[in-house]
Image (cartoon, rainbow, N blue to C red; front, top):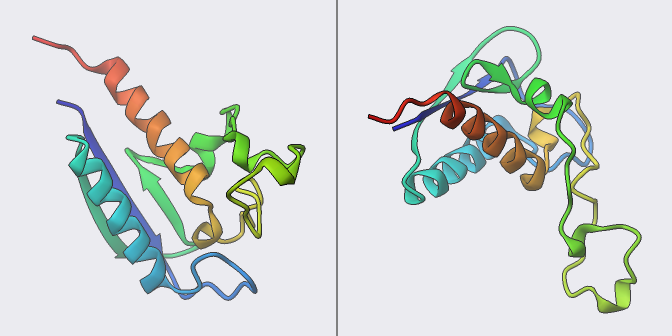
Length: 131
């Protein structure tokens, strides 16, 4: 079975205005919830929150999230498309999922984080040898 290894590395509290998760504790809680979702989906996953130097980041299987997302073509759900007629949309967001202050990993949207996790999982599943 493929194993996901997720690490949240933080050197200090984020100090950005209006970011989605305003503290290391909030981001840690979010990441624990995400890992719980993965485990409930029968995806073997480990998680650690660690102090480190430099910019706060999330590393999945040795690659940081920014690196994983760099080459992806993200497709948003219809309800997340900014060009859709808002009268037909049931769910509305204050900020679109693609609106991410990349200076703060804590500001990443759930949509982008789950795309990064999906890509990392696809990469390890591709390399897996079934016996």
